[in-house]
Length: 259
Image: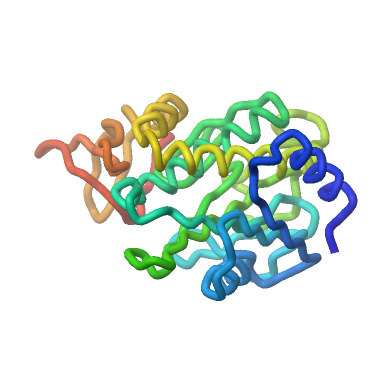
């Protein structure tokens, strides 16, 4: 059952943005909103299907890691996108587009603009405010979909020690409570809009992401036994790293950042 605060905020969004096609399904608790949304996508759910929950008991992030999702402490949802085949060249930028959208939605809702860190983190200083996960289904076919998961920390909570040391929350940064309904509405609207921009003019997404990511230039990183300094992202969204032997292009992997 949809909580009253979300019902009111989404109703207001529909009133001012009747062009948006959203089907939001909310749960008190699920193992993972990504798993539920992925099942819906496999069953043919339209673009704009959204699965959210007050709590995830087995939330997950990149590379199979868990995502701490205490009840009531965050905004946890997954969004089904249906990129058209003609836009497949821009699919590598989809995670960056989602990051730009989440940042935009946060700013629209509370007037605060966090930073972005390659490839999928929303940051304040060296602490993570939100994470984004994108998983493709049947890519290259007529039924292709991408499920975008968002975990956004709303208020301080009792995270595991390894998470608490590197996490922050909107309420903690702002010094006040955050209205989650308006935040959800703004982030969903921004996701819809920025994914449409990605299809039309992917260069606009790259410019917005680069402007919001100070760590993408001049930050020391280590990966696969190597080290270097970030030197921006290229037009395909790959991270460029300047090393002693030249500039290397990284499209995936585990990096240690020295922010």
